[in-house]
Length: 71
Image (cartoon, rainbow, N blue to C red; front, side, top):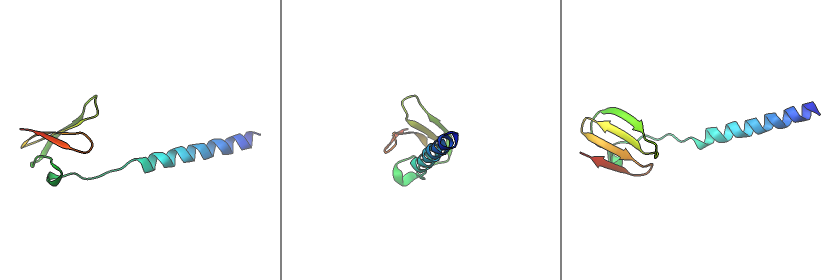
């Protein structure tokens, strides 16, 4: 009984871990995506989920799909 429980627990943990690894996606974004040119000086995420990127040429807000620039 205990071995069966341990096996089920291990299977659930492996499934959870593998799904978390697959869910993460890393991509590179550059000036062709809409971010201001220049060296990135700072980077922050606000409480609404926007990513703010400060460059030597201005400030950009990334919504997850689009950039909005503030000069």
